[in-house]
Length: 180
Image (cartoon, rainbow, N blue to C red):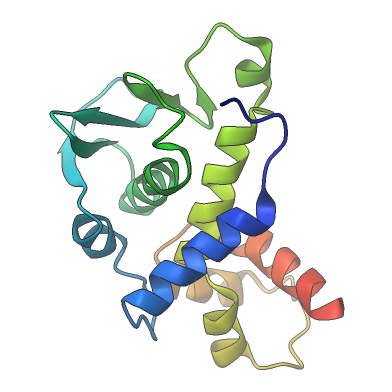
């Protein structure tokens, strides 16, 4: 099976189901604990600086590798991203799936452009797992409006243990979803 377009709702739903399954009610989301409970073996180790993470199955055991040289927030995102591959793409991925930056290491032009549907889905999964809508709602309230206040963004990024860029992207998506 090959994906021709990303399944945004499926990625979000899978992340939400894990949060519900493990009764996650606060930030930061314990992504490592969730991955282990889902049966993943997690290995942190120094990798090439461009290499964020990888997912593979060895002897029937799903394994997630994360670059220990990256910032802890980046490690959390990489782990969540690779967990997304495990939850969404384990039946598609054959061999080792390596993520370099945001794109998979393939010769295909789609991978280099960051338009690979599997990569987009894994990113969506990670974003919704680490910064779920319900936690944004409980922290910010329903009448929140997006602010340019860098201190506010920094405080939110620390609360969720993600980058400020990630918080900005999630706030925009969250606000869009409230308008629908």
